[in-house]
Amino acid sequence: MAPTNPSLPAPEDLTPDAAADELAWLAAEMARHDALYAEAAPEISDADYDALRARNAAIEAA
Image (cartoon, rainbow, N blue to C red; front, side, top):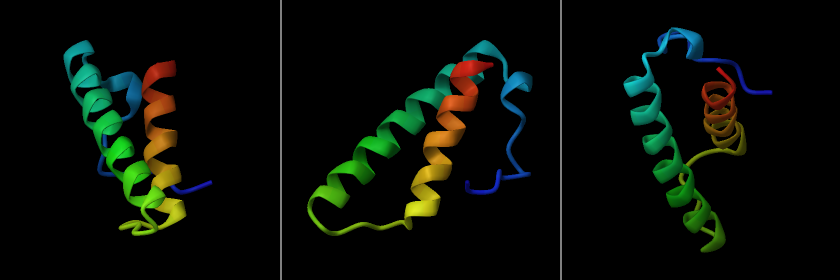
């Protein structure tokens, strides 16, 4: 599992608006990286992509 980013607030510390904004950003970012991966032109490592998905899951669970 990819390490967490200590510069980001813990998911449970996000306000509802901040959580919604970050989830929207994460969804767009993951979709962009999914498309790049499908074109065999990834811009980030698998570990970095996994960190995006883990952050998304953590916010959704909070």
